[in-house]
Length: 231
Image (cartoon, rainbow, N blue to C red; front, side, top):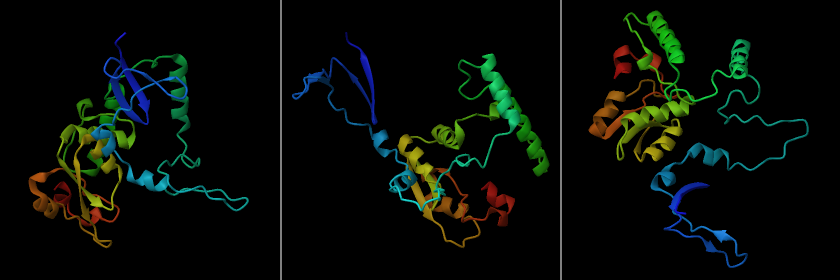
């Protein structure tokens, strides 16, 4: 029977049994598959921060001491950030009632997006003199900030495009760009630099830049005017 086989062995490999027939191992006689080379996308998808953090060998701690990893990006790991009781109760009720057991819209349910649009509109009205109104069409739910970045960059970036990010900066941009087969252009930052140089960076790289991420911990956007931030 000629059928597609999807193998998950560290890297994703897709092969057809007719093109790559099974062969027996010399030692055991058990069937095996030929090794399929991973895709360019898989090879370029790298998370540099994980290469550094996960390579840290286990350490023997003094008796009575526990390790707190400051590199952990999950604020809930050590129990310091609990969800509101109302959220837990509502989620438990939804699960027990079985009203959301199936698939939802890929961009999020209409009710959730309406709620976010209302909140965003009310928040904008408090912080801005201009009238801004958001609708469900303006809202897209994703699986965390990582998923949101992937959706946003995947929408505007084509293969071969460039994304300009600060250095140092958020390492996940490199991970997502590798999956999209785009290039990361890094601009070094001075430790005491107070003002983003977005306009200057754009003038240097010009049409090469598809996306620009100007904000970073070493920059202070509060010292800039609204016109600079809009740029």
